Amino acid sequence: MTRSSAPTGSYAVPAPRVAARAVSRTLVDVCTGVVRPLALDPAATQTLVEAARFHRVAPLALSVLGRSAHPGLAALEADRLCAMATHLQACGVIEQLAHELADIEWAIIKGPVFSEVAHPVAGLRSYNDVDVLVAPDSLREVCRRLHLAGWLLVDFEDMLAAEDPPGEMHWVSPPGALVDLHWSITNMPSRRRLFEVPTAALLERRVPVTLGPTTVWTLDPCDTFVHACLHAAQSGANKLVYLVDVDGLSRLVSDWDEVVARARQWGATSQVCLVTRRARRVLRTDLPVDLDTRLGIPWPVRALLALTDRVAPVPGARRNAGVARLVARAVRTTTTGTVRVLSRSAARAALERVRRVPPGIALRRRSDEASLEHFLSAVEAEHQRVGIASTGTTEGTPGDHQRRGRPVAVRTRRRSDLALRRHPE
View 1 (cartoon, rainbow, N blue to C red):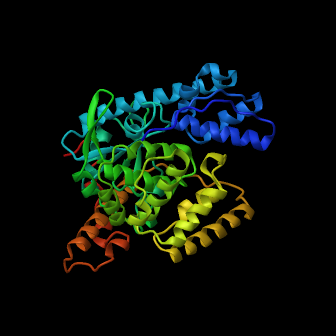
View 2: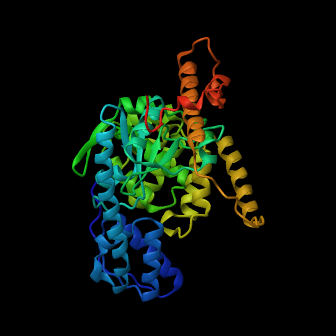
View 3: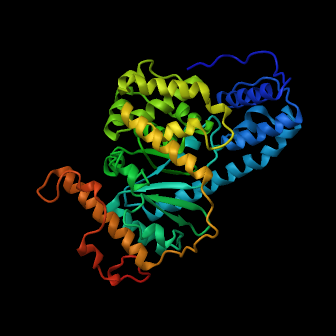
């Protein structure tokens, strides 16, 4: 795709509303690489700095606009240095992971990959942690290796002891880098019931990618694109960084029929539709003109998405709460499903605004050996149930993978069986 050349002229700021529009327009220019003279007063420049941070494009803004564009932009230097330091640290952690997990199937997803292969300026995408995907039946061994290598598990007890296991756990490397260790790319159990994304298939299709000095694995371009859309929609798709990711990743896709097929397999067609529509509208991302039709999105849902983008454009967002985020998180594959979830979400949001804040916060305990064993056993049990359901054996019935909880045999596992003890026999 060839973007239009930079237009002449400068931004005029005669009124607060016009100033807000000028800031939004500047943010879009930052994301598309358009450079034009800035004519922002100090207040508007401060608004630009805050908006760039909200949209997680602050390092990119400084790179595109330059330090000399306005003295107020110097505040973004800290964001640029932080992004660079985070990416360098992530590359070091990934190199260590490549050593520890050499004979295990795994893949790096999201942040470091997006920063390296999809961001307009490689290494400057804002992200906070390294996301690693492993197979559910490898999770125990991966945890054992990280533990023996001096990594620290930082989850709380209630997170690991939940009846329905979350799709990720959180580790800190010896140098202090945060790593989200996923056995599923959908973290919440309720979302795993909505989206069928088998980890084994993702790892089977993985492709090599070079991050810093190390060549590791990531999801293939189609899986990466659909996952980026799904993750963006679940997060609200109300920040420009999500659209920048999808814009950059779209250039790596060579087979849009396969993208549509994966979206259908995952049950994520509406999420792909929503995010790609926003990317096309805001960043003029070059996408197939008939993508919405191929995804099979009902026209009432498409109309809702179009209306949302008109009344709540992403570049104008300055806080998380809002219509754009509400619709993105509620959209479903059918009109009735979308309306039902949207109504329920709107009612819940209204209640949260008026409900009384509790007087105190309950103390949370760090995870221990028992909660970790519970979590690993629950993941293994769920993985086994999904496998039984998918093979159609007589054990279990269709839909068993949606009924969580551990069988009695797993609950009675002796704690001495825990594979993460420091000195295994």
